[in-house]
Length: 102
Image (tube, rainbow, N blue to C red; front, side, top):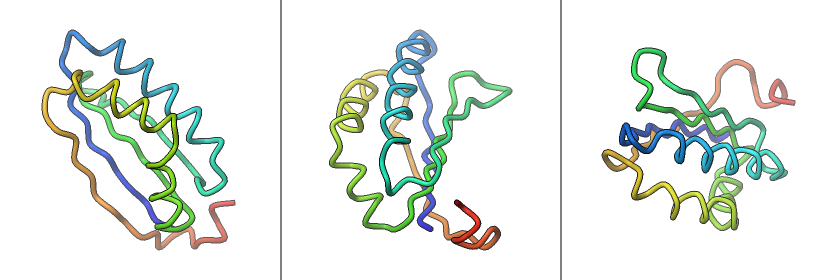
């Protein structure tokens, strides 16, 4: 699995707009065959900070995700809403193994 954590800081006055755009992106992403999981998380102690946890079956599936219309709509919509550029870290799963992702 190819696991990406995307860290996002949103301008306080743009939260609802960001959430709506990201929920639409998440819904589209979950329709992709190469995505095993796509979580949209809000930090409990700071509602301007979010994490996307994206679990792809392969690195190629992650690259294909960036070519989808829903991702590109999301990227264009949220860029002006961010307080700072988003960052990401890439992980490999240990437990569960690949078969455990369903």
